[in-house]
Image 1 (spheres, rainbow, N blue to C red):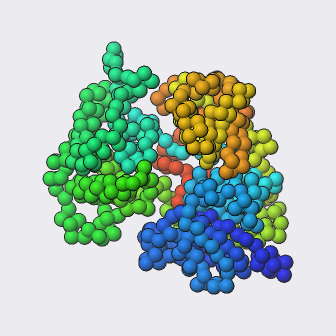
Image 2: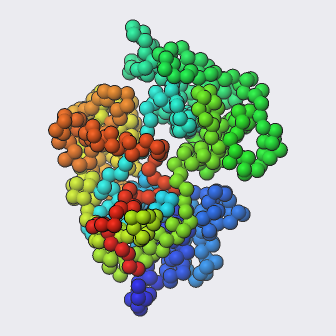
Image 3: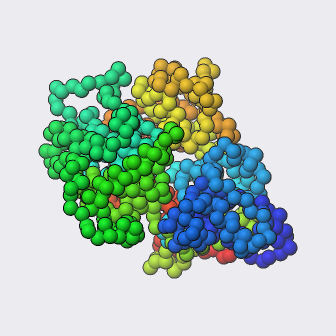
Length: 598
């Protein structure tokens, strides 16, 4: 790229927002500082973990535990003390960073590691009409993509693979793989210390179809749920006593499971484990000597005795952390959170005769991490800044999506690009002129609060949604605290939301409006999703083989399942984050890509 006076001026005058100060973020900040950019703002909620030091080169050992954004700012000033750089140790989804905040920048550079934040920044940039450069890496693969309102597709134009989930009865009753125990342990953390979610109950599921005995009935509430005491309430009553907690989750609950005899006709039954048995279990003497050794802590499988000791220690610490707070948020980079999940997952695995795992392996699964490669981050970050300069000069057509891929026998090139920028999807429920989406829910059992949390926030990525029942003008959900709280526990049908209802939804923070068509749907099989979101109306057309709306036919579904037979991913977004999937090693006759010339 020729460095003309226009280029220099555009770079020097630009105001740049960098979202994320992780693997790619550190490289992007360094490139910006050394390329003549004078005004940079950086935001990141994370703190520095020792595992970051092998590739996030702006950080040193003495920085562990400090805010990434703050330390990155200081390190960058050491490269170039003449630039104006502002750091925010905060979440980009906070209401403090609205549309007007984004409007003050000439360009936004994403270096995020999760889909929810990417979706939010995508919408904020669309609302502010500010160009966004999205980037991500996944191991040796990566990509850079320009998002510009009215010019390219947005981040949400193409549907992303849904998060890998597991049937609740498998997690609670019949785990068979380490990941099942890890998910259970994360759910247990939330039940005891986090934001309570009924869908994350860790108690045995007596409604498991496999466990039912013909003619046997269960005690139910008026809503049809099994009557249970809140796990959090019970834990508080016993003052989080480790021994009583341990016996409840690893002995009493397991003994209850064994009474469901149908579950164990073809499976090896679990073996209940009491606190006394676990505490007296033999351990590794070397563990006692090398308590602070990283190799022992992270890379070696803990003995059952050590798991029990860690469970007791971190439970007491987490109880103290919970004081004066409504709940704690689980984070893979917080030691107590990670230790709790490691200990509980391995104890449960031991009970169900499942291989136990190292803390490092559990962190990789629980934190949805794909190992990051420093050179991949550096290459992608270089392309990000090259494209940023082109965007500042309004050379959008020179910014097609670029892909990094491993060299293979099929191709000698590792960088390739689309031949042209990708146009927006006219049916996108985010950037189309009239955003519209179909949702399939059970209007007779889903509550208004569940609709808000699961559909509007989790699936449709709203932050502070409002919803009005079209035709009646009834305010169903309000972002104003307390205004519609009375509706929370009401079923959708009770408040007038039935099959065919239309909801007018909007998010003031994102400056986003969406029309939602509600369709009544009942899950038939235990593996069926509890609800579905269908953005493309074409997917609602009846399939020739009679499949239900929005589902693949049998052959396609079987093929999709076979692709993941040897792969278990809890979330498709890796640590440094890949924004979309792509066949990265196609044959030589690639018609849709061209070699990058930079």
